Image (cartoon, rainbow, N blue to C red):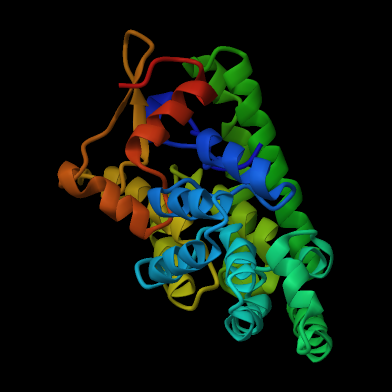
Length: 319
């Protein structure tokens, strides 16, 4: 299970698990499987519809426009963008995008080399493929060489433990008693991560890869008992997103968590709370009318999809 699960219903700041949302992911998997499931958004949905219809130029244009509206494309969309560009005959643009994003770990080289799709097949059949592949292999090797593998492995292990205790709490009914079992794991993880940040700085995509960076975020997001540490991480995460070395969606989640702990309205609508009747509802949020636009700017799905996913994950009504 991936994403952000709440630490305790008693803390009043319930972060949502970041999943690949069912409606768009189903389309993506049907069309592109086994590409990574694509993050839900109206723009990505429109690109997928164009791709299904064989309108590769529209697919590419849609995602090109999206690039100008978000810090980075949602995780998993980058290779799909390459596919659309190449399928539309925009081979040079596809190669340029690969060169730009491969060092950031946003494109899987193995999938680029082997995935059987119209655009990628066309890319590999082009005259520029051999030199481009050699360059891509070097870029990937350079990226891998920069990863702190022992740190990544420890982060992934701790992230898995974080998720396991949260899944157990949900399976046991999700009441206050069930969530109490997460406290020991959270405190141990947070104490360890504070030491890492003090010694090495924030673990970024470049230093620990996507899975390691995601685990680091989860640990920090669930350290609600240490507000000063979360505020410190927020500053570092903002800088990492600016450098394209962290996911904007992670920044949105932590921003909302910190704001709510400060008694302020959240910005992206990611924090929900349990009600006495067992349902869930969104905590106070600034400018509700502009919420979906702000969420889209960070690669998050519309709030209606978010509520639907919350209901499925926590097995209770979401208002």
